[in-house]
Length: 355
Ligand SMILES: NC(=O)c1ccc[n+]([C@@H]2O[C@H](COP(=O)([O-])OP(=O)(O)OC[C@H]3O[C@@H](n4cnc5c(N)ncnc54)[C@H](O)[C@@H]3O)[C@@H](O)[C@H]2O)c1
Ligand SMILES: [Zn+2]
Image (cartoon, rainbow, N blue to C red; front, side):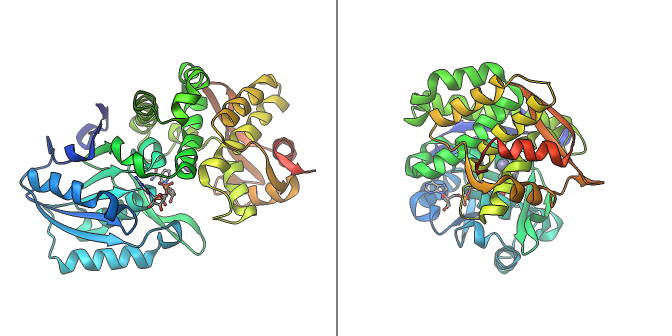
């Protein structure tokens, strides 16, 4: 059990089984709406519903269409209208059961319906467990880009149902591991070394390994969020690997590479920025590559360095032609600084298969 320390908005992240979702219910509400998606609901919806009913709650259910391409204003709108048809009031909690897409949309509906409903997150993908479920960022995508419409709305509880991972496919699991490596590079050299030693157990999803990585990642993310809830400073370090990672997603086209894979390659590239600046030895990049490969993640991309640099120029954190990048300078240490086009090109060349 872990607390995300945000004063009056503090909440707990607890690891357990899905059947424990309704236990030790932290909210003084009698009613909830369990919102899942049409892939996860048939697998896990009934156990979640039974647990909530067992806690004495009235439960209604709504299922969203599955997929990143359905993380839209239309899906949000249909959800909000469905909630209003159910005549929810401010003492109705929304419970999200699904991956990061579901948690983000349901969180945004919770932030906006009746100007704010209590929200419980029950992440079922590794990526949502180690990243999306903690921190209160909610939102949807639009034609102009990913996550451009949203709100900060902290959950009242994150219940990580580790047993739901048994139905997650390998590709999605590995995608979550990309963000796990990011957390280790960002803030915890000991955890990075642990991953190097335990990569086989992690890939086999040994329960002890899985709960350790979820615990470590949630603790790391919680510490950054607690210091900087609204991302005005330190929280931006959580974006390490993401400047080049987003550029890779943009160049290849969303859907052609998984987010966690792109972030892993982004970490390798961005380590090169520190090397070019004389702030790190080449070994930094080699160690990150070694761990990613051991975890079955790619370390190179079929895109030209030139195209990747062009894509970085669209980055939200750009100012006066310089892009602000959170790049690793050591295992466990990241720096946030302005980076020139030439440095970005050097970084991109380190991972580009097309020279
Ligand atoms: N809010 C944040 O701070 C934050 C942080 C990181 C990522 N995100 C967002 O998270 C999203 C990515 O999350 P994701 O990778 O979980 O994607 P996702 O929600 O699309 O899940 C991937 C796929 O796995 C399925 N799935 C989930 N759990 C399953 C299970 N237990 N068994 C079988 N199938 C299961 C999903 O239905 C989906 O088809 C992106 O939209 C990203 O923007 C948000
Ligand atoms: Zn990410």
